Each structure stands twice: as structure tokens, then as C-alpha cells.
Image (cartoon, rainbow, N blue to C red; front, side):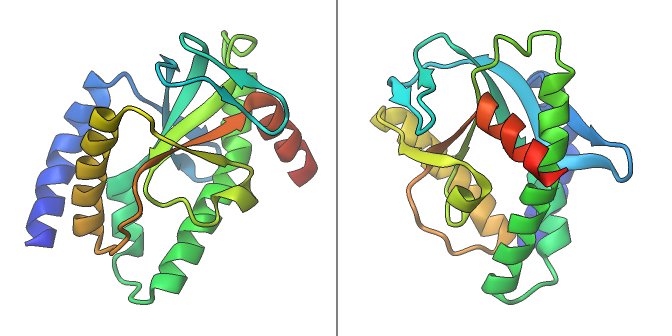
Length: 181
């Protein structure tokens, strides 16, 4: 059943990609990273990040989406949850430099206050530089929980955490990437 759903999802993913205005973040050595992104205006509750960055309604953020079909395919033969989590952690960590370069080269880079993602997979994200915040709107949280649970079912992940926002200020991302050089 899961492989059937993954096949359907793989077929529909390019359509989803086009309709959601997503862009691949390129890596010149491997071609594409695990990130797909788009600019968005923040609609949630005000948030203040550890570095003092204040995120308010209508601020411009770069919304990151993990390329779930690719991620599931790369992780599907790994049975250990610990190994899967470590591989995913390393995939994201290794691609943060490319995300930083993407923002640096973006025509609206000075407007982008932070990157934002929504996930149920928030263990280890703090070590990557992200800060987790709960989703305050209960209807949106329930909607995201449903979509994340479908993804987790197909991926074979038992994670039952509620979805949350992950933020990283642009300043933190850029300084984090400079340290990795």
C-alpha cells in the first residue's frame, strides 16, 4: 500500500511543485538539494527569535519544504529509526550552505527576515540552528497534522509529535554558513 501511495505521490509531485511556486535550491556538485523553497508572507502569531529577530504578520520569509518524495526514497531501505534520523539530519545540515547561497543570490535578500518550515520532525533541529514554535491556530495545526501524518505513514515514520514552526533568522543562517566554510 505504501509503495502504491508513493508512486501516486511521485506522479503528482511535479504538479504540486508547479502550483505551489516552489523553487529547487541548487547545489552545483549534486544538482539539487533536499530543499524546495518559496517566498511567503508570515501569517502566524508574532515570534521573537533568540538572536532578537522579530517575526510579525506580513514579514517576508523563505518557506522551506523538504523534498519528501526524494527523502522517502533515499531513506526507505534504512530500517533503523536512529540511522534514518541521522541521515536526514546530515542531509539537511549539508544543504544549509546551499540555502544560504540561495538567499545571498536572491533579488529580495534584504527583505527576507528568516526561513520557516513546518514539521513534526523537530528533534535535532536546534543543533542545526532552528528554533521550534507551536502553531497557535488550532485549525491550521490540525490541517498540518493531518498532512504530516500522511507523509509519515508513507515514509514509515511513527512520529506523533504535533506539527510546529521551525524558524531560523537569515542572519543566523548566513553566519552559520560562514562558519562552515
